[in-house]
Image (cartoon, rainbow over all chains, first blue to last red; front, side):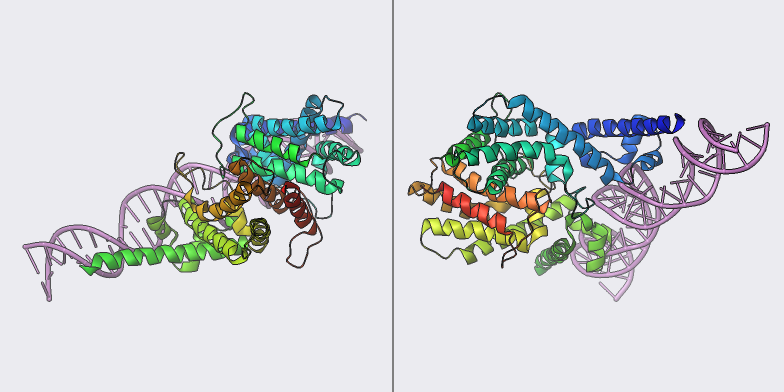
Length: 204
Length: 204
DNA sequence: GGAATTAATAAACAGTGTTCATTATATTTG
DNA sequence: CAAATATAATGAACACTGTTTATTAATTCC
């Protein structure tokens, strides 16, 4: 009875089509400017069809986030090449800046916009970011364990590094600070300097 | 000819009514959940009337932001009591956390949401935050000038302190990190610890 | 082949920001 | 004071939004 399986496969394929179209359009125009109708147009189905595969826009965004976080985790893996823990941390943080600049709209929907965190069950872990977050946490923890950075609590260390980078990125993305000059990787020079300075400061 | 002046006064009063209603509703329900129609209902005018006083929702938000930033600047002044530059900096940063927790929705519309930064002219200075930002900058700069913190560039120092605090606050507000335990001032304990640790770390 | 199930849709609902022609109110002028 | 003019306020509409539902088309099962 291969019909059930074929149906499931087709259902999965349809979800793929929807998510792929959504990602493309979110990257190009930003989450808020893309409507369900736009996505439906792009995949050449009616808007109501999307609701047969996703209960609402938040649930669709959740899948898009999963994809985006996978992209970030891969981005990390591609850029963390060193053996030295401190250097690895530096590579990770700088590639985080890099990612945010290359995929501004993805960064936005991963870390800044409200949706879909409301619909994520309260006590449930937010699993999407796990892979990327683990890489940060493990790297930072290794530095703490080896006494390379001025932290005692690995969790506080991890969140601090993240918060510092995210603070700069999000203020910049939302135009609360305006940094004119970009370096060769399109990262605002002052931001790179500030992050570099932070990493230098936390070193023992 | 006092009529012209009275008219101007009435126009100003109407704008006040609109802004006041908007702030109340934004604080209570958040920017995105409050519509022009809701505001019009509250002040007992038709929605179209609001457009006689504000060209669009962004322009209204700009005035609301101005109010909110004044509140923040006052909040700073009320909490910065010490004479010691380092202690002043600490008071400022902690009262920043305090403000964000007390007025979550205001913090949101001041620092996180996209609007109305699109409509603010590109080269024009973003004047709303000037007063509050100056207080931070002056305090940080004083610390740099006196060699009390491990920075050489006052601007990088200022933005770093701000970014660190904002990073934590915004990740927390957007549920990307979940910090359960609150202290007596309703500030997540781990956040306060991390910020305190940061301030300790940048001390010479 | 006919009945039952599944998939897709058109149309509608309730909401949004915003505009515009129309009405009501003040003010200025003859 | 009355008529003409300028101002203020509005109801209704436009073009959207996310979402639901009754209806139609296609597929699977017996």
